[in-house]
Length: 85
Image (tube, rainbow, N blue to C red; front, side, top):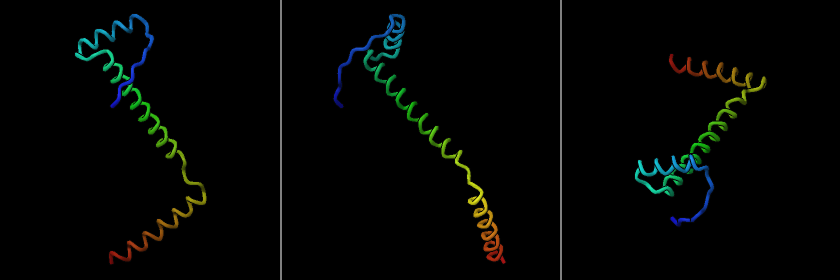
């Protein structure tokens, strides 16, 4: 993997926390920022996936689809009932 250098500006109190955490975890600041950004991106993807799933579940059947489903259930019951005799 190719590394790319970048410069960012953060508030001094946050920088101090980053320094302390990097030291505690025994990783470089760069590695800590990479881990944090990777985690943020993954959480965002998970959130987008969850939104897509929730949106798809909100698409309930309309009246015509409901009637088709009821007929299919009824037909399926007859087929199953006849196969258990």
